[in-house]
Each structure stands twice: as C-alpha cells, then as structure tokens.
View 1 (tube, rainbow, N blue to C red):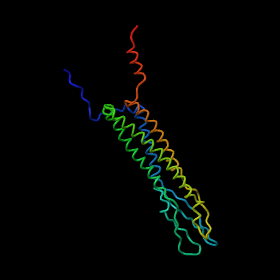
View 2 (view 1 turned 180 degrees about the vertical axis):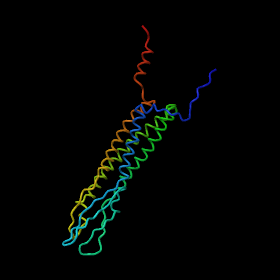
View 3 (view 1 turned 180 degrees about the horizontal axis):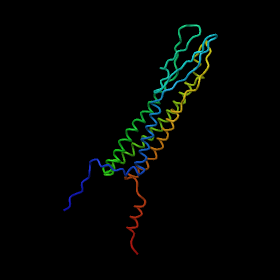
View 4 (view 1 turned 120 degrees about the horizontal axis):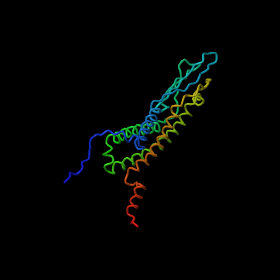
Length: 236
C-alpha cells in the first residue's frame, strides 16, 4: 500500500507568485504604503512673516511645525517695537489624531505586506493547503482597504485645515499693534503626495481583494464548471 502524501511545512522559496497579480499587487502595496507614511511622518516645515517697526530694523519671524501637527504646542517669538522682551505666540489647531491614524494604518499595512509576501514566496504550499489562509487574507485586505479610505479622507481634511492655519496671511493675525508682512507660503508638496498615496493604497488594496477572492472556495472557475458539464452530458 502506498503511503499517504505528506505536506511540506518548511520554508520553500518560490518567486513564481510575484509574476501573478496576487503577489505583484502586494509588492506595489508594500511600496506605496512606505511612501504614504514616510511622507507624512517625516515632514517638517515652517511659515514666516516680517515684523516692520517704524524707524527700526525689519525682523523675520519663523514658526516651525511638523508631524504629528500639534500646532498649538509650537511657539514662536514676535519682537515688539517698543518693548525689549519679545512676545510669545502659538500656531492654532491640533491635527495629530488624523495624522497619527493615517501613519498607523500605513505602518500596520507595511508589516502585513511583509508577512504576506513571506507567506506567498516561502510558504505558498501551506497558504493553498486549506481554505483558511486565503479567507483570512481576503478579510484582512478588505479591512485595510476600508481603513485606507477612512484614514486618507480624515488626513485630507486635516491637511486642508493645516494649510489654512499655517498660511502666512493667517499667521500675521497674531501681530498686535505692530505692522507685519506675510512671507512665502510653506511647502506642502510632500503632504499633498501623502494624501495621493493614501487613496492609491485604498485602490490597490480594494482591487487586490478580487485576486485573493479567486483563491478562496467562494470563487468558482467558469471554465472548470463548463468542463464538468460537458463531461456529464450523455453521449449521442
């Protein structure tokens, strides 16, 4: 009697899944996830204006800000034309919740991509051995697609408010009884890119659900079904 087949449970590197949409899209998710949280978490910028005193020297004032965008905790000094001691002022707003939520989704998505790529490339035989692996993968991927939608929308709204309250035209309103001229608008290209990467991730993770769904028992191959019907059909 032949012995029953044994399943190999050890690591077995196979780069074949990278040629399939299941693995290729996961690599794209990994890359775009890095771009999303890196462009947000590593950001630092500044806004500035000029204080003009009658008969005195113009003074440039710079207010710095950055991740996690608790603007009201970032003080800057406004010189007074008639008083030797400068006055301390703060930017307005706290947008740390939307920024940290966005970065958190990105970090956990990055870790999940690494874990599933190791599973696809090294333990594909275990992944396909039972239906549990693809089903869990499908549910988690769908959850991440939803989280990317929510976090990207929240961060886009937070970024819009950050742009308003760091606009030099708005910051100069903190000047009282002195003349101030707004400076250059702070560079926000990196943060704009983070929002774009967030929504691109939502599209990637949502589209990948279809390819993972095809690995689950819920999906029926129409070609295989047609072949079975032809085989069951009675002869002439």
